[in-house]
Image (cartoon, rainbow, N blue to C red; front, side):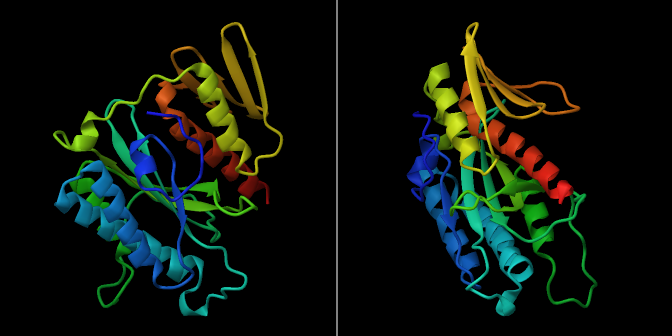
Length: 265
């Protein structure tokens, strides 16, 4: 499976180990577009039809929230608003998972409670995150929110992503996918390309003694070893991943840097 680092909207790139991203419309149609994209991606992965339907519902709720709360619903100004984005990738770890994220640039002050906030009984809306919570829990996944930076466009705007994860069911064709071995040099190029495209300023990479070190900023480093990928954030120990989880590592360090930048504002 090639370690593609390109940003594109090809659903098949997900199966190949890529990190596709799509802009969502600046209107209520975003929910339908996101739902359709999930169906296409899950079709490529051979996911069960009921799982596909439920996850499509969950992601459409996140896209709706981005439109209503981030863009202001019908009050959104298409001339100034930043488009929400839908991202997807596979995370390997101890079991293969699909990770889906809906990004928007709405202000988030945090901290975030990892659970649904129930609206008043008489409310006609506001239950989208309850739906996401229930559907992801049913399949053994989870959801949450993190600060991060945009992937599309030229500004790498600061914002947040609401994400959900879904373990790939045993017996599903996607469960048989195995990332092909990648050389440390390929992983270094991929990590470097992904982090430099996210507006993090000057990123330095050095190599020697059988490994490479990518320094994003003080205290934030990624080490690429011949058989593993590790990162360290201030106040936390090293976290180890396999070489095929470069996207997950990048997402974690970018989220940390975005959190620091947002607090600095």
